[in-house]
Image (cartoon, rainbow, N blue to C red; front, side):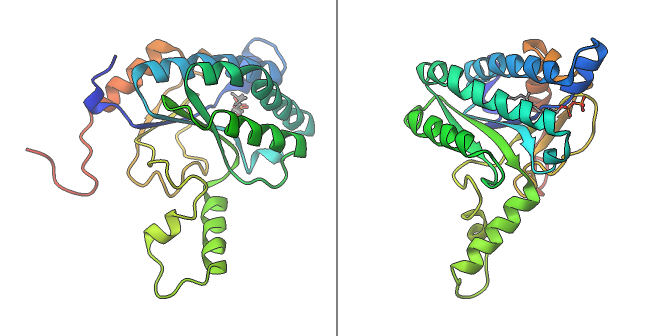
Length: 234
Ligand code: FPP
């Protein structure tokens, strides 16, 4: 286990590179997503074992609807498969599954499965596993602003007022955001919540990200000095 004092309470990962992983092997892109899902299942166990309390992943963004219809349909089927086949295991491992994102555009049957999985694991306490599906940071801020306007707030709005209207207001901001596959950007993930997050980038494609890579990222994080705009601790 990594030094718990310097462990992120909330680890977030941008799962990138499934397509390139598949291409390199002359496989269809969807095979890359399948391999990515298998890796994600391992990672949930490892992250829990490390003692991390919140683990969020960017599985489908509000911009991913622009991908070819076949790839979008394949990803939706993968989400269905995962909920149908794997949520029992999560519950046994005391993991709570939560979804984060806009509910519009997602197929009705998938929405029902998502709701079922959330209710079914609502009392699990070891790890909150947060799947960001149809998530966009800008959409989340806009949705929160609209909810606030609808509630007719009195007086000037504060940061806390806005936060209370986010999709998962009880989840702490991500301490560490990992992005695989060499891209150096946030791509609309946890836009507001990442104000003081630490970033870790690796060229490894998501399906090749393993325990050793996770440890490397956590050790790198533990060595950093987070100051939140203050001065260095002497
Ligand atoms: C980005 O790689 C990955 C995605 C858009 C999908 C991520 C989804 C999974 C790993 C499956 C998750 C399944 C569940 C049930 C949560 P990319 O396609 O952009 O790769 P590329 O940049 O190499 O083309």
